[in-house]
Length: 386
Ligand SMILES: Cc1cc2nc3c(=O)[nH]c(=O)nc-3n(C[C@H](O)[C@H](O)[C@H](O)COP(=O)(O)OP(=O)(O)OC[C@H]3O[C@@H](n4cnc5c(N)ncnc54)[C@H](O)[C@@H]3O)c2cc1C
Image (cartoon, rainbow, N blue to C red; front, side, top):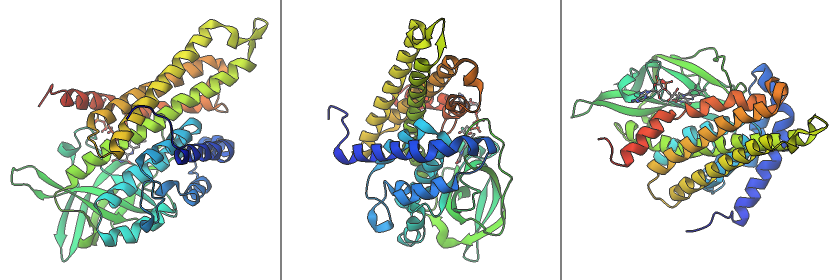
């Protein structure tokens, strides 16, 4: 396959999300971000548009599209705001997809229609206070079988979408025993929100993504039916590795959007802002900054298109997803820094989108595997370590 031209339906989707981000998200997000409020109305409208169900089959309430379509939507949302984009990313890539890929028929029928409609949100509870990179080594959350129920004890940190009024279910990775090789047996268990024994802490005060929802969770004798096991017992490790590979492509698309949003804002600003008797856009120093920003956004897009195209074709994506995430998160971070510089003092003011982009960019080099992790994965795929 050569060429990356969007097909008719893909371009229609991209355009409709571009319009939605411009007409619905942009006018309200600044205030929500400032107040640290979750964008309930925006999420409800995204649900009605079908964005949460983009890669899910119609029989489960989805749109029957694919992961590429989800990433297209994430890029367009990311161009305007990352709190909204990460709410969709975590809700679908980390929340819906594990249920869709590994859930029993009953679990899919119970959860997917509401999740795809955006009436309920799913969260993915993997990271623990002891560490997210060495997640298996740091895992302390345990679940034991007792009278036909899983009883969960432990805690999770930084869990997106876990404490909203519409959070429906959290997929929790927990140690459920010991494997024959002595390593911990990890399984994933679905915990509906409101289950006794699950405590959702006060939401974090974050540097960025201020309008998204992130909490620490604790489990104290939290009991759910045995049937809430997601897929097979002991497959939790493989499930979360595959979920994170896909998720990295989605975060790369979101990051590309932020990188492109910095270009959009900067091109508009340098035409209007005047210094030394004319628009600052006539200064080659600023033109070159914007050209470099456009190059970074372009490269980031090619990287996620390539990884997503392989994923949709059923080809391995471990290396390509890591390359896409590394390329795009670096592009987002660099472009946010340059856009803020181009805006001068106004770039440091909350009323301008670039200030939000600056605060939102850093987490893209941390979440769903840090940049160090992406480099480790690429090196491993090159056969450089065992
Ligand atoms: C806003 C936000 C939302 C999040 N949402 C979720 C979510 O929904 N679900 C979820 O499960 N998690 C979530 N996370 C957690 C996120 O995935 C982790 O923060 C991330 O994986 C890093 O883990 P850590 O913070 O424990 O850092 P650590 O693992 O403690 O790493 C600290 C530093 O050490 C480096 N490091 C560690 N090991 C190595 C090594 N072997 N070689 C080189 N460098 C290394 C890391 O790259 C990093 O720079 C979220 C985090 C944030 C901040």
